Amino acid sequence: MTALLAIDAGTTSTRALVFDADGAVRAVAQRPLALSYPQPGWVEVDARTIRADAVAVAREALAAAGDPTVAGVGITNQRETAVVWDRRTGEPVAPAIVWQDRRTADACARLETDGLGPTARVITGLRLDPYFSATKIAWLLDHTPGARDAAARGDLLAGTVDAWLAWHLTGGPDGGRHVTDVTNASRTLLYDLRRRAWSPAMADALGVPLAMLPEVAPTAGEVGTTTAFGPPMALRALAGDQHAALFGQACLTPGAAKATYGTGAFLLMQTGRDDARSSHGLLTTVAWDLGDGPVYALEGSVFTAGAAVQWWRDAVGMVGAAGDTEALAASVTDSGGAVFVPAFTGLGAPFWDPHARGALLGVTRGTTREHLARAVLESVAFSVRAVVDAMAADSGLALPSLRVDGGMTDNATLLQIQADALGVPVERPALAEATAWGAAAFAGVAAGLFSPDVLAARWTAARRVAPTADARAGDYARWRRAVDAVRAWGEGA
Image 1: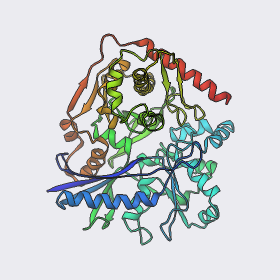
Image 2: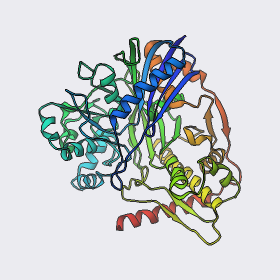
Image 3: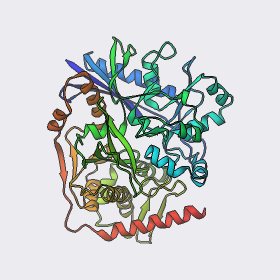
Image 4: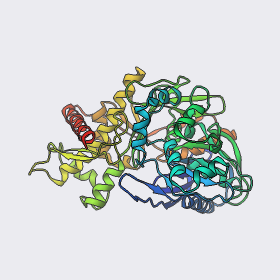
């Protein structure tokens, strides 16, 4: 069997999936990934664990699949997580700073006050927000003893998780290739979208030495050879997780959009060869590059989605399992006036408020566990609605449907609430592993196994949820008022 191997280095787990050339999953292996929270708003991870787990799960999945002939390996990763490591030893200088981390919020605010914001948006398509990698890298250099001097000597390398893994898998200190792809590069606040290169101006303004940064390559192409999993295998694709999901969902024409519901919820609308800029709080990002130049997308990132359900389960004890929210929320017709704003790590698109925090409003003596469960699911669906409205305003395109993936899409009640909130059908693919399949598909295209047109022809929906006639528009308006209240509170805190 000719196979494709995908390594999915996610926020809460590291997985490996073996696909056949038709996209069928032949084996899966997974290890949970422990995050640490040393201070409020800080989120860290040991990059060495990601490296070790990637090798372990890849070996396990390949063995379970019968050690097939691998035509290509694709890596997809949590995008903005930043790693700084020693090029001589291959060891990180400090824990990696995870994309959710907000420790550089004040630094971003100062840079905005100093006037860098408009320049950043023109050059990178992004906003000055602690979400992105550059201020994390600068923080590590400034707060790790000796790191700034070591970087000046050329002893340190920096990158996102894909670059960290690619360097180690292709040799590490013994000639490993320091490389990232355009999707991950475009999430750093350091990549010039129009010049298609690192921006000296942004690197200087943010305090990141250009010499630390990896080579920028297409998403699909020849990255290098790895022997980490057994026989030599070609590493043929690197892609940020949301871009991989967009490709895996076959959103191959301008206007097609997907939403991935994981720890957060991430929406991308493909805009073709046009690097459309947003005036409604969205980001411009590279969707992918198959070697013939970049395809772009508009993106809106909702920082808290599945994490909201996890919090209600683990910290509050409202449910015994995350899936319990489905039946609880379905048992009531509305939230009884309760409104939840899931701003645990600030608000992402289209609000962009790093100081906002979560809130539960509108609670009365009659509020029940069922009402709260529905309010939690509504908070996710309404956060997505806010992004979709911004996409429609920026692109001028009416969304015909939304393709969805991720663990939360097992929740039928959420899908119905989402369809009602948007007023358009929500489609879940037959192949649930959209992100991993996107990474594998990029590698498959690079290997010449199939074309993007074949991927589009193969995509089918396993479930299509249409909006109901009695969707409650007032619920969304009330949630927006709650968001305004939380933002006002955050500004005064």
